[in-house]
Image (cartoon, rainbow, N blue to C red):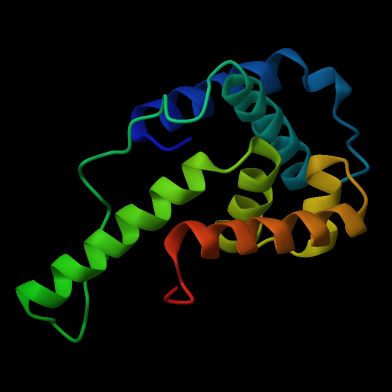
Length: 144
C-alpha cells in the first residue's frame, strides 16, 4: 500500500471482510490462498480509489539487523535505495504492483499468484516482466 498505516487498515479490513464472507470459504481447499485473495481484493479496491502519487511512503523503514555492521554511509545508501524502490513500486499500475508484491515480497509461486489474483499464469508472467521492466526504467538500472 506504500504506507504502513494504510497497510494496517487494509489488514484489518481484510479480516473483517473475510469474517463476513467466511461462508464462501470452501473447507476442502487451503485457507492461505483464500485469505490472500480477500486481502488482494481489498487492497486493489482501495488503490483504484487513488491516483498515482497520492500515497505517502513511511519515513521509518523496518531495517533488519545487518550482521556485517556497515558504516553510516553504507546504511544511508541502502536506505535511499530502498526508498527509491518503494517509491517506484507505488507508482506502478495496481495489477503490476500486485504481482511484484506477491512474487518478491510474499514469495508466492507463479501458480499461487495466478490463483490469488484469479488471472491466467501467462498474465502473471507478462505482468511480472512488464512490471520489472518499468521498475528498471524508473530506477534507471541500466545507467542510461
